[in-house]
Amino acid sequence: MRPKHKHHDQQPTITATKWCTGCSACVAVCAKRQAITMQPDKKGFFFPKVDAKRCNHCGKCYRKCPSAQLQQGKVQLTPGNLLPMAAEQAQPAFTPHYFALSLKPDYKELYGCTTTGTAFRISYAFIKAGGLVCGCRFNYESAEAEHAIASTVDELKAFCGSKYVQSNKHDVMAQIQEHLRSGRKVLFIGTPCEVAGLKQLLNEQEQALLFTIDLICHGVPDPQSLKLYLKELSSQVGAVHDLNFRAESWVPLILKAQGSEGTFKAESNNTHYFFAFTQNVNLRPSCYHCPYATLTRVGDLSLGDFWGVASLIKDFPYPEAGVSAAIVSTAKGAALINTLQYHTRNVCEVSADVMRATNISLRQPATLVPPVREFYYQELARTQSVVASVNAVIARFGKQA
Ligand SMILES: Cc1cc2nc3c(=O)[nH]c(=O)nc-3n(C[C@H](O)[C@H](O)[C@H](O)COP(=O)(O)OP(=O)(O)OC[C@H]3O[C@@H](n4cnc5c(N)ncnc54)[C@H](O)[C@@H]3O)c2cc1C
Ligand code: SF4
Ligand code: SF4
Ligand code: SF4
Image (tube, rainbow, N blue to C red; front, side, top):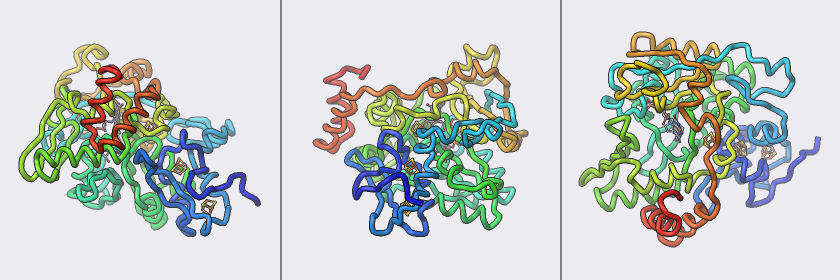
């Protein structure tokens, strides 16, 4: 059968630039022919590039691409999956539940976790039960965030803490598929678009052993900005070997970078990197049109911050220690959250409306202001400095860029 799409030499045509999330599922789909590699564009975002000499136009990458399939109306988001449009298949078998929860001990203090360490604690139980966990860690040598597979608790510690940048998936999707085929249970933790890519890649049998946690997601900055920012930090404190975007406390957020010659510490919201991230200056194009910024979640379990807990839940204790928002969308999600049983400090089930109120990322995608974004990248190309580029953005557009 002839494919419905064509690949050009440079541009990804599996799906439009605007929709491609960079999930890297297509690389794994084409693992045998190895026709697809992820290559950075001018702004530093990774997009699939197809080698025309290796491609046999089978069309598999297009048929498995979650973004292309969503755009074509071939699949829809249902609790815990992307399923074909056929109504009987899309019927959710499980009613989602919504929770606010805090944990003991303080995993932020112990391992630099971000909200409560719920992701870490669940991963810990998963490893102890003989499973593998795929999560995101910093690679300080290549100055990037990357996904990797952990089989020990020690390896898990590098996953602690949110890396506010798009991770390099390398070939983890194909590795996960291999592990599942050989009968290993795997827990994947990542952004919803990554979870969607993985689920599209796998058949039903492979999915049976897969568990997923998606993060409530504001968007991801380009890897190039992080690389340049790390270089700038290193010029102040020596080679950075430990970066935490949200260290020490839940509120205020503290950015801490430990270098070979000193430590940089500042309120995250006052740093140039966080300004670009939170003000939507340097997010991936797909993040401004994200189909996953909704209460219907693609993962079995979803985790984020339960912002505004003091006003939304009367008398919820220990809010200062960090409170997670958790959405359980499937029976597997319930099994994951049940492993927290003896480690929760407080748990409170809330309504869908209260959950939606905690977080703008459950209601709408980040807002794009094209001139601000273009100006930032122009300045970044010119100055090779995140600090200078953000200063230039603020000088031209003000702090509410
Ligand atoms: C890019 C990004 C944007 C986010 N936006 C929001 C938001 O708008 N609102 C909200 O409530 N929460 C958001 N979160 C989620 C929040 O920051 C915490 O990750 C979440 O509450 C889990 O906290 P924890 O203490 O349980 O995780 P920890 O125990 O600290 O573990 C962190 C987990 O996150 C995974 N992870 C870290 N960085 C990445 C990455 N770049 N890509 C994929 N996976 C990663 C790790 O594998 C690990 O499993 C975002 C997270 C990321 C990475
Ligand atoms: S599978 Fe993922 S990386 Fe590949 S084209 Fe689709 S969205 Fe982009
Ligand atoms: S059409 Fe087939 S061979 Fe070509 S890149 Fe896509 S999956 Fe690979
Ligand atoms: S905002 Fe959407 S497209 Fe962007 S990283 Fe998050 S889930 Fe993916």
